[in-house]
Length: 326
Ligand SMILES: [Zn+2]
Image (cartoon, rainbow, N blue to C red):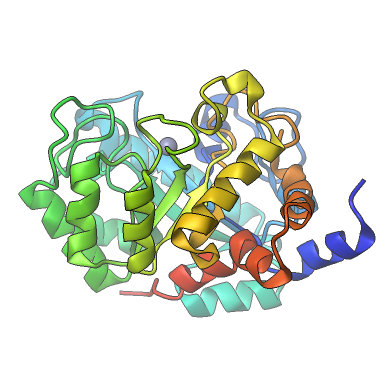
């Protein structure tokens, strides 16, 4: 049972979830964004119950497709998402700038931040990047686990850094006011990105010191991100939380949050659930209604109000101050 005062705190502060795969879930199941569904983990009703104010929606074209069809698929998925947002316009709107985030908050509407997961749809062309920016995309996870024409993902053996095109993309994202997302990126490309000093986040990762999965970040990487003002969205993906995913639960997620706060500083930690991108959530974090339980647990684990407010969303709000219209 969560105390009244903690629930009130949770609903008063801004809660940001920096990653979900709900767009794919909508496309796969035909369900809608609005009404509460018994499928998946995220819809507007469950986000409202969970007190989420800002939700990143990833348009992910991997692993289902190689580069050839990815632009068409990304445009289709983005259109599906924008149509869903339009048809629930009293409850949700697209945040294209820091001013939009504030206006949506005042209106009590969910702010949707549009993201691409994997740079394949860019098709090696900066004009396509600019077009996605015009459509409202404000963050790009440069790779998924595999190689693309920007860089290698974490599951490639070669671990190649940013390609020439990858470098151009990072520079152009910096110019446009977009967040470069280093989750899924191989280690060498991670450091290549930091060297260019763009607005940077890791939307859905965890700490490899606690769970040595290639998708997770080492303490050195955590410190590097923090040195640039970056934020790590701690994922709830069971396989990234515990090497025995069956043991993943609310406390184990809190362990990662506390570890990253200790290594990188509490102002560099956020949340990036990856809901709708996993079969079953960790115990206690089964879907988007469960965020208040995490707030309660962070207090129980000794964090103070200012730290918890930052982790729940204040830190990502700071990063989001950098997004803007072209
Ligand atoms: Zn992912």
